[in-house]
Length: 325
Image (cartoon, rainbow, N blue to C red; front, side):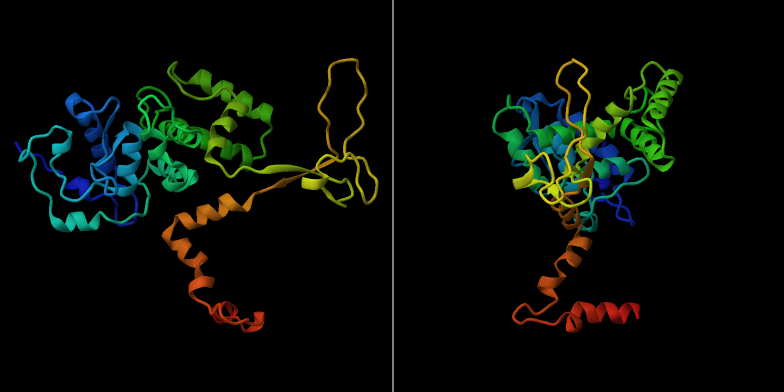
């Protein structure tokens, strides 16, 4: 009996989100492929995404990511490179294949956290996911790849066995959002987590406290850097002044006075601290989307780089004035 596999080339919905049917189909494909041991290479199979085209052997998690982001290679409705007999599946229409070539990644309800992980970890070329896993079957993935797979699994693990509404990552994200929105203290958050964990079945996957929750989401990136500052805002203790213990302008000490309690060495506490948000990873996020990347490159493509232009006569300024005046 032939099997209908039109879902393979209907990856995105009209709104640009990954269809739930496609996600389920990918899971079914992976289950089937890894049962065909003669077509496997250790813990790897041929990746049938549009980019790899069954030429590379990758592990389960990497193949899963490639298919969700790239889609299946055209004309592969019969999984012959993974042990399926030719002619066992109904052919897929050409229009369906062409419609699946969009590279925008989204999700229907229940898949938004998977997409959040993909977007946060950045382009695959930067993570080198494939190269990190292809060199040797016994080689461990690099830190970026390991963090990515860990978060991706958290986005798919039910909050407890049999739960269909919440996943580990979605639950933690919503709880941390409540903490921020209502200005909850850490002790309050920890107490709520303890109460909720006691209410859930024994198979629940919630972390113990705020520290564990924050540690899990820290893998999403966009971290800040702490820089000590003079109490009077005169200077930053940064780079060439990083090791100074007092301000070179006003002479104010960098650290607070501590009483000697006879114990071990305690960490110095600065009077004031600046939290710096590095711009590089944030710019990388903007270039991940084809829509925002087009806007980010306007100054190269939309302006004349051969001559100096006064700010008041700049084409971008004139466009903005025309739009908002």
